[in-house]
Image (cartoon, rainbow, N blue to C red; front, top):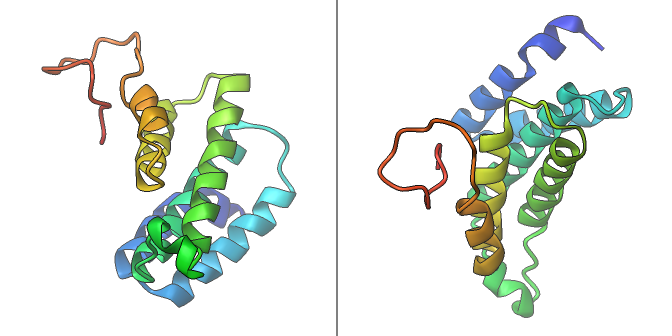
Length: 145
């Protein structure tokens, strides 16, 4: 895998997400899945899963996927993929810690649970005790939300 891609894939993902181009998003998902196959468990793998989750979330938004419509045979496949990848990233963070993306991962996980109408689980992650000196007016709102 190209070392420039490894250094810049997060920025490329941000650009693809901003462009809302399905072609760019799909190409990056393919490249990141290829990168994923060659990685051992590491903070880099956690970041890859986080980025793949964000790309699938954008696909879900572009296609106006609504989780509530699954009973009408409109299953939210991109939203499900996004949730699965952010769960992988979160589990990797829990198992190995030392990841500087914990706030972003946890906030995205809570937001996705909320999107799936799983508010009890979302609230747990939104009210996480960060044990950091974050100066805000409430400990009950996840920073970076």
